[in-house]
Amino acid sequence: MKPYADIAIIDWTDDDGNRELSDVRSVTFTNDDPSTPVKTMNRRRRAQGFTSGVATYGVELEVALDSASPEVDYERCQRTKEIVQLSYTQGDDGKRFNLIDGRVESVSTPFNAEGESRQTVKVTFLDKLPED
Image (cartoon, rainbow, N blue to C red; front, side):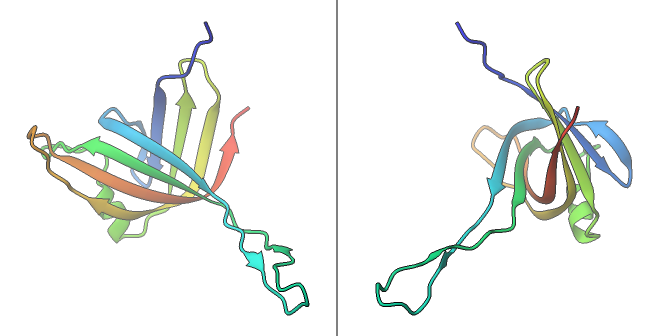
């Protein structure tokens, strides 16, 4: 049977330093590289190709909200437009990646029927670098 990576170890770096996030309940990584069709005036009335898009990398973190002492003050990071870095490892001995030059785009606090309050944090990064 083939083993699959089932955990991600996440480190957050901001002006307050570097720390491993332990309150993360779920994380979603997105790689967005938009390219749009190039429409020109030609006899065949069809697009000629695609533009090269600018890649952005997004992360959506769902973290347990600890009102007494949160791991990271995401609202402060958003308010001050702080540049952050996120590093993650896929699996126990998996490949490690660094997402750099990020900014917190939104912070929301949904409540659910189970009573646990969580924060959903969306961060956009400019580059993704693999670690050697």
